[in-house]
Image (cartoon, rainbow, N blue to C red; front, side):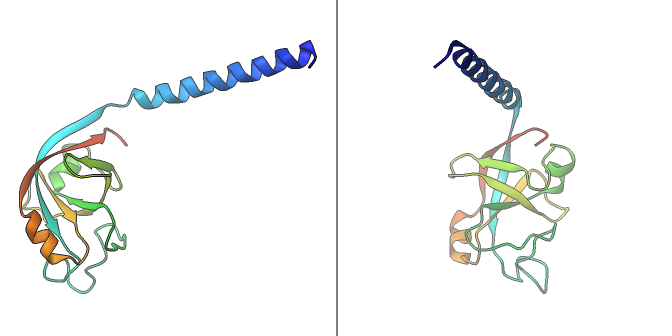
Length: 138
């Protein structure tokens, strides 16, 4: 390897490392919001959703059993900064959920966890206080 090739390779490596540091620094500056809410569960059945198509969420997404989705009360959308498709962590549950649905206007500080068509699982969940976290403005 020539000296010129060695210098060029070191410059490329340094540029690559600086790019990684820059990108990782951008993401680490984002702040997590945390809030305690009441969590219930819902299913894709007409008795619990809008009539006609219980698999279509508020923004038009098609819900499928197994999806990690939540509906949120309108105050969480308007006052707390959650938005459509925001990724949310629910303390005590594995994985990340996405905001794909809205709840009735009467609810405050509340989420509804989507549980497909498993009505028994939703009943067993019941109503619980949980802590949710999300990246602000994401």
